[in-house]
Image 1 (cartoon, rainbow, N blue to C red):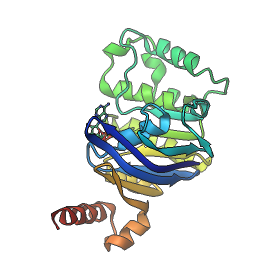
Image 2: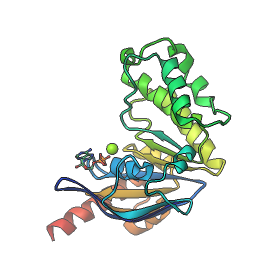
Image 3: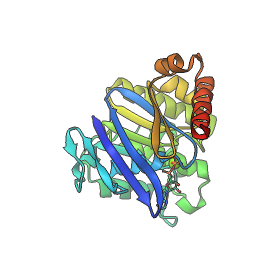
Length: 240
Ligand code: ADP
Ligand code: MG
């Protein structure tokens, strides 16, 4: 569904992506993990065409995305930090997103109702707490029923009830055959949700595969420990 070949991106002298090659298939939840600054958000933004890579190729459903924007109709996106206009009310933001996207589809309003977005309808974005903004942003990502859903740290600022609702939604969308890509620091969440894990470090893919293959490669049977082994190996490679 998504193929990425040797993707590179520099911000000034800072190499955020140092040659990333990946294939991501449908019917899966893929978790991108890695420390802050490892390039996760930059990679997602490249897939969305929000950041232009310096070199390399991205194909979505066999179409090169270079300069294309039609494929984005099929993609739902929740950014790590949403920046809706502060002076607009929640209902105005929702209307604006529908208008801008221009998708003439049946809206998937499940999260709108379970996350109780309508209770916030008349509040201005600027008056919402971080978690409330996250809920709006998350509901918007699923609203257009795209076959690719990209969620950048979706549950980071959510209360436990909302977080469970979102996790259940992710699992349900996967069952429908969608590709869901999430970034996350929360090991338990990744362990229960993700089929495959991509571990990024310093602009490179350090590990890519199923949880099971991570366990085999590290000799550990839980994700936290397996990740710790990977990180430690990386440190000793750097020293050596
Ligand atoms: P992550 O999401 O894994 O925390 P990011 O992709 O946000 O990492 O950032 C990767 C690197 O690229 C960091 O060093 C960050 O400072 C840099 N970076 C990201 N976006 C920009 C930008 N717009 N301008 C300058 N540097 C950026
Ligand atoms: Mg990020």
